[in-house]
Length: 363
Image 1 (cartoon, rainbow, N blue to C red):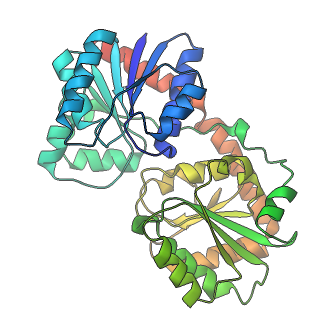
Image 2 (cartoon, one colour; image 1 turned 180 degrees about the horizontal axis):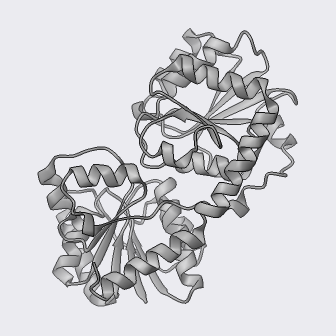
């Protein structure tokens, strides 16, 4: 099968990483893949390093109509069997438009759970044979916005458990961040934007820091709330507790060194960072919002509390500090679940079945 993937996101975050997982696995199974992406995007270098065939096309965003034209011309030249549009920025509206011009069957992945006007949803998803939601939460949003059930399918994101070694020697990690051997390390990873909920995590940590002097919080990520969150941490007297570690491309390599992972998102398509934590045998605390209820099994692989409830979040953290056996049990359960339910093989099997159904004209 000849598959052309379109990913126009700027940064190499969770979505583009899933595209790399998918293309590599499809290639291993003998399928022909080409990735279309902007030359200055994060996925461009990663894909080329992985030996993936890449076609660079500049995309300025959803209103870049010349991109749609260039893309349609490339579709006609490349003659793929199917096109898979992955990112929301530019790739869905313009990618679908380009595929329509080229008369090539096309599917799209939807990764976010925010709502939009029904008219916009109708325009966005009309060109696609199938719309892939990465969680039940996203599927419900799409159904509510008028996407027909027979065009909708759920394929959850995958995690490569083999890259998260629970037996990792973490001494170098602790030295880099000036952590003592007995420090209890909580990590959070995500863009520093309002919907990621970092302000509630800082409040929760501030509530219990005096009771647990060994408590440390590492916040990985960048975003326009950086200065605001640093100011909040200072006002809560968290200077000796919190480190803002910025974006780390090598974050996956030391996930297993965390004692607890916090993901207090107020809206989340699925929560790939929470999946990675589970794969590394690290329990997760967060809010019961969006796809987090699918990424984390409350009471089994982590604890989810009501959104914006910093007191409840603090209590969830306290449980894992005081009960190391619970922490180990939840961590082990999370890793088993990632192996059983979120493997790359499972994700690829479902994509291939979908592609074949589209090409065979099946609903």
